[in-house]
Amino acid sequence: MRSADATTLIRVLLVIFVAYLIIYKFNPFVIAVLIAIAILLDAVDGFFAVHEASSGRITLGVYLSGLLGNERSKKAVRSVKKTLKKKAKFGARIDVAGDRAVEYILWITFVYTGVVPIIILFLIVIRHSFVDAVMAAKGTSSKMKTKFAKVVYSSNIGRGFVNVLKFVTWAYLPFVYISGYPITIGYALVAVLFAYIMLRGAAEVYESFA
Image 1 (tube, rainbow, N blue to C red):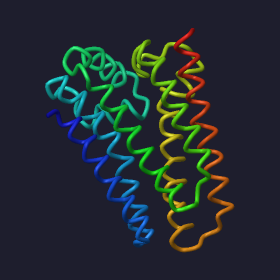
Image 2: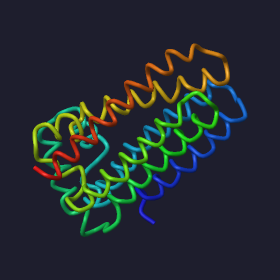
Image 3: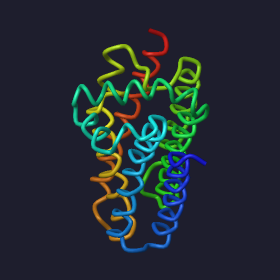
Image 4: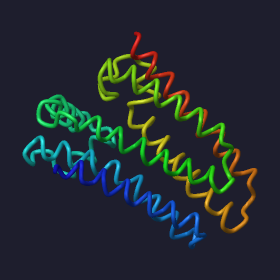
């Protein structure tokens, strides 16, 4: 098993563990830390994928500098990613599957605990199902060409923003359920995250038919 795929599996198992901690009202600060680790592992599996595909040429320093906007590093990482489909046929799809599993586990948990309306879960499942279908026909999100899709979805800023928003929302909701924090703030965070998830979905659909 590739290191990237193993990291994805660990991330999913970690989130299953987090779900149980939430349901059984464990320390919400510990839960927040574990959620942060799960989100960071998404970047770790990306590094492992390009590091292995480049036979070690893409180091952690090069990968991080590319994420921070260094053009030379970004080009180096991009060139390696073009070969990933041949070297790891299912790699990109496994990464997407891991992302979806993590999201569904957490959203289902928050619906189960009563801090998120079930309609949010239904709409997110529908969004992912149809968007993933059109993107699977087009290719992976790393191949975004249109400006709208690049800015909203595949840019470092777009990816960074949604990950920060996911962490803040998912880390706050356990405090609502376990410690009685104001649910109105939770609803506001969920609304913003939901809206941005839908916007990213619109960007993927736009890219698919552009």
